[in-house]
Image 1 (cartoon, rainbow, N blue to C red):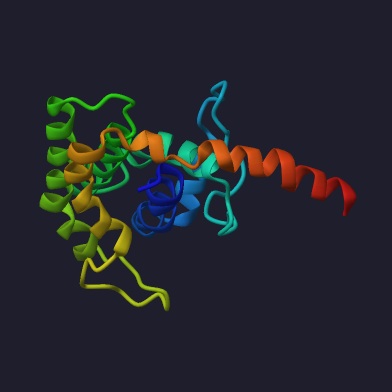
Image 2 (tube, rainbow, N blue to C red):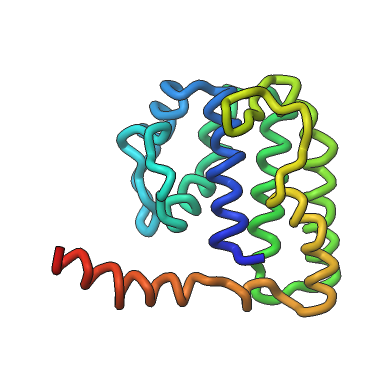
Length: 182
């Protein structure tokens, strides 16, 4: 799996939407807006809830970086544990060198999510495309996570499959010049 198109996009498509449903759009927007500026990370001073679907992978990553601190005290502990477990899984699986101990931590993070994911459905946070509550976990990007540890054992670190380099080149060579000419 590619970090940019799987983990960060999965966070934006699912985890963030669950947090918006539980904490509320207005409250989550406020909590992001009052965060202290950090060099190297985007500051979300305006609405997070109204970000376009085509938000960049960097913005998704920065939203994910803050999420646990932002929802702390505003969501049920079991919900926060589930979201944190997915974040742990994402960050651990991006390690440049993954030992047996790190593989075990990745596996444990995924298990911790499974142990607490029922809370997400119980609280009514998981919705489908037509905004109907879901009562299942048939989400392809979540199902893909089951194969991460076995894949690492076979091919090594997943970081080698990252699209960050080609995505950056695409922006610098294609998108930026195209914007200048339009």
